[in-house]
Image 1 (cartoon, rainbow, N blue to C red):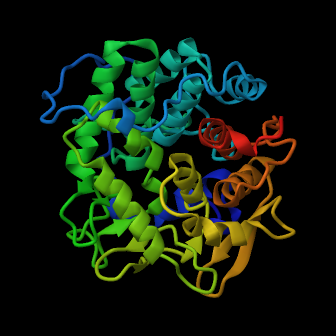
Image 2: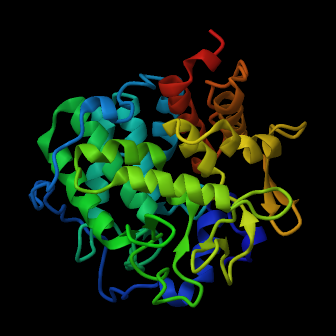
Length: 394
């Protein structure tokens, strides 16, 4: 790890600290002679037919398409972080790209009604990350390395985000190939990373390799930020045979059990071997991954207001314009996230928990910040416009 957790590039320390700590388990086979992939895998291969009838439309979550519109924040985001080729660039981590970022870029493009950008991002994703032997995405692409994809493991949250974005695109634009691709990915990560018969309820593995009970003494491991609740409300459109509602219930239940230390916050990585507890070998921090938990919970409108209470308490003081990384052992802040986009999470959480009006500048995305806080800010705006418009001052 470059300089350790404290000195790594801010917006991606959350991923790097987690993955490098598990390096012995995480790395897939190297592709010694591979250059950057340029052939786009077909997007229309038909997966197995659904084994269950699609749910009624009234039972599905809210559609994403168009909620951002041609917003100035989206235009600035597109210009700053998305290349002409469709690569979403993580500006705080060596300009790498990853399946998470490609998924977020695709989601935001649908929310903005920007089909041309969506197609560019999807095309790059197919060409460069869909290089595994299955239907999932390799998690990381580095522009200064050959092969650019050196680790063939997936990241389940990235697969979820891409499948969700394709589902929304298919609904918005009536494109059959998007629906087929969404189904193909959803069926695959459902088969390989969701443990529906776990004693704790449906359990989501963070990747195909490295986190199961077979591979870790404290396994299986979970990461609550991988429970993308609003995606699970929409994926029944393309993969109705899976019990997505069970996955939502298990995530909410895990959140209620993962209240560690004096601040009652979840750690990034949680051992599910017995009673949920901080996983071995990882810092017991509420950090870069976990700040997305209240975003997804509020966006989906699931759980109870008290489920958001620890986050609202943490982010509701005089320092609410910056977010702390917390050591759950003693409840102390060990670092601060100061880029302005992060504060959108605290505003959204207060809105969802107690209908607190949002700040006047909530819908203004500053353009002098990095990929991750900019992304979280736009996602928070989309969540509010979809589910909490009463909190907006207009």
